[in-house]
Image (cartoon, rainbow, N blue to C red; front, side):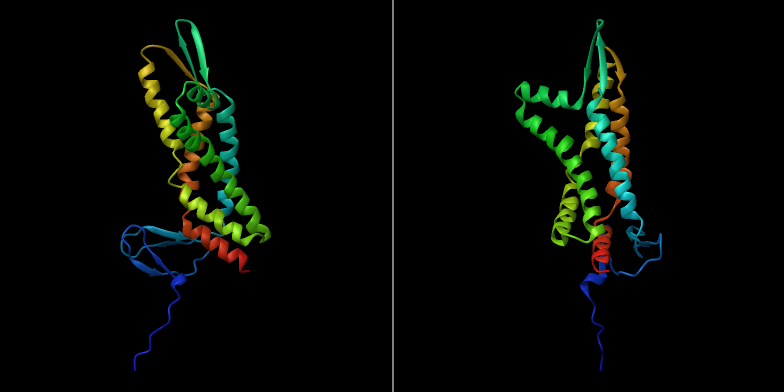
Length: 210
């Protein structure tokens, strides 16, 4: 007689690179679970990962505020100087009738980044006090979906490409905002986008089930 072990589907995980099925195991502090086939990192012990995510979210928020207030670049052509801030750029697009482009830029450059940052902070507060469990679930779902809409890094690259073309015709200087924008992109790419969905869900389940 063959006895089959009953497996809970919540205890299984699929590698997002090679689709190999694994059984989740409890990791020690700072531990990392890698795929046995391709070596891809599937999840980590999130006891400190989410706390770092909150810290980086606060950092990203400060950088984003600085990037929005001060000029990104200053261009001097024939002795005439012009500066550009993110709000001015969006206002100009709408004012000139480029409503579709303005709406897209507003979504990917303002609404989505701010929503993601504030969602991380709100989720941390809700989970910390173990309140509004249903709302926390919706926030996590939003964070996972919004990863594909964060394109502020593409915007920064677009600015650099545009500046390369201007160097031969005008005197261009970078503002404080540009440095803040680049730092924001670095924080966004190397940490906020590096927190895997399974790690957020694991953190959620662990804290609410304590």
